[in-house]
Image (tube, rainbow, N blue to C red; front, side, top):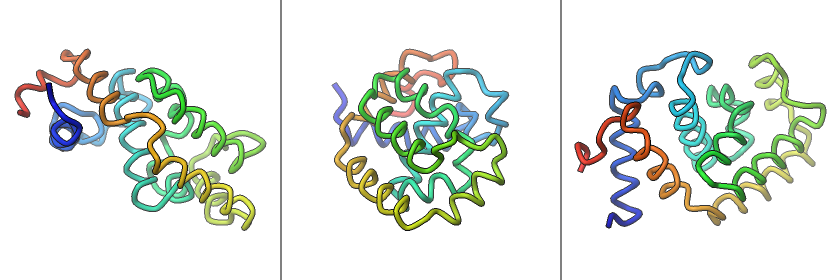
Length: 154
């Protein structure tokens, strides 16, 4: 049985490999569903851990925002999905902009009250209400046709 550190190490190797559409830089809308799930969860976790939800909505990772809740539910991360839903509702009360540039512009100009709420949600995210590493690893492992045999990364 692999521990969390080992699963994380394997996922870090995987994300840099040709097995992921994320690493290949494929257009998100053209990725298969398993690849979109991986890309969404990976982008969310990487961005939030690097600079918070505000950064997630501002940086190039924002392309995953319309799918991130579905991705989190797909891997069984229901609390993180709810947290993401609340962040989107806070940041974009009228719904996510369909245009990525509009989303970036909005994120660059979030009012202080929105930033404060997103910062609170960041702190909630950092408590890891779901084991994103374990859940994403288990999801990837069930899709070897997409991600290969994970024992190759051991």
